[in-house]
Each structure stands twice: as C-alpha cells, then as structure tokens.
Image (tube, rainbow, N blue to C red; front, side, top):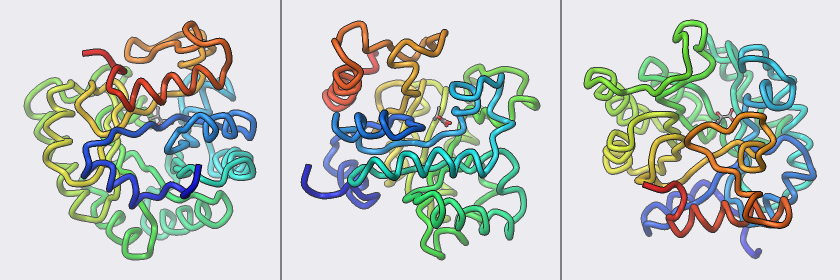
Length: 260
Ligand code: KIV
C-alpha cells in the first residue's frame, strides 16, 4: 500500500472505468482490517445507530456518536478515505450545517462528509465545497426521513421520482458535490445517473452499473441478524473476517458483485 487514497484518485478511477469499494466501519479493529484488505473508502455511517446501538432507525444518532466512532477509525487507518455521515437534523439550516461539517473534519478527521440530500441543498453543498469540504450527496432512499417515507422500499420506481433523482444528481454535481451515493433505486436509473454525472457514483441496492459499491460491514459478515436482498454474506466463502472483506473488495473491483 503506497499512496494514500484521495477523493481525486477516486475521480481518476471513474475516468479509467475502474470500480472501487466502500464499506462501513465504526471501530479501530475493523477499520484496520478494511484498510489491509484494500477497501478504498471507509464510511462511518449513521447506520451505526441500528447495527451498533440497536435502534430501529438512524434518527437517534448524534454528532457526538459519529465523531466518537470516527476517531476510533482514524486512529487505526492511514491510507483509506474516511467519509463521515452528517446525522439527522445536523444540517437543517446553513450555519448549523457549516459548523457541524467543520466538527466532522476537525474532530472526526473526515475527508468527505455525506449528507442525505436533494436539489434543495444545492446552496449548502456549494458553500461547503467552496470552503474546502468534499461532499457526498446521498440520494434515492434516505433513511433519515423514514418517519415521512413510512418504509425502506426502493425509490425512483415511477418516472416522476426517477426524473427528480436524476436531475437532483446533476444539480448537486454542479453545486460542487464530489461524490453521489444512490441507495435503493432501480438499476436502470442508477446506470443513467452514473453516465450523466462526471463524479463517481456509489451504489447500494442500485445494481452493478455504478462506479462503486457500499455495504454495511455487519451485512457482509452475516452479523446483522438480517441481510438485505442487495447485500451478501461474504464470510461464508472466506475463513476470516479479513478474507471476507478482501473477497468483497475483489468482487466489486472485478464486477462479480453485485450480480445482474
Ligand atoms: O449509514 C450508512 O451506513 C449508509 C450506507 C448504508 C449507505 O448511509
């Protein structure tokens, strides 16, 4: 492992048509294994509210929770890109969003911050970007809005919603987003978004025609109690946690995960 991975390198990978892997991690031991196994980006996601803290949703997760886990991850890694989630209501108005993004970068060592977004956040993303904050705009299923949505089902199934997701991605790229994450959208829509924007698109439950995949670590280890249909337990084909992570990384890179 020679050169630290950067957001710029992820963009170069997209230009070369090289897929990259993203995995969540919330502690030093798993983060170390992720880096050793070749993961490109570690996401300290607010999924920690469900898989670590045992909540039913990600809504109770706080800024302090993300920063605590991000510090654990940062102590164990040197090369991987660290992406941190802005939790529920931590970016509801501009000055609060800027302060909290600064906290994630200065206290949590974020190299990218991710926020569940839409075109209404173009101005905020532009402000963050102009101030040197790399941003990943999370579109499609946005679990922080579960109490409005009512279910974790696929988004963008009808043409109006699909058009909005595509146009939001284009607007947020223009505003300065460095990465787009698409969660639970039809594969054809994810393919269209991936072709329409020049920044890398990371998918989860969004098919194979994207630039990168992200999964929750406990799903690939079969430890979440429930494996979503788009995920896979890689530990059944490996003899160690590191081996399972390595298999995930290789499968994303060579395009064998996810299957069509
Ligand atoms: O919080 C998280 O881990 C996420 C991924 C599931 C994309 O947002």
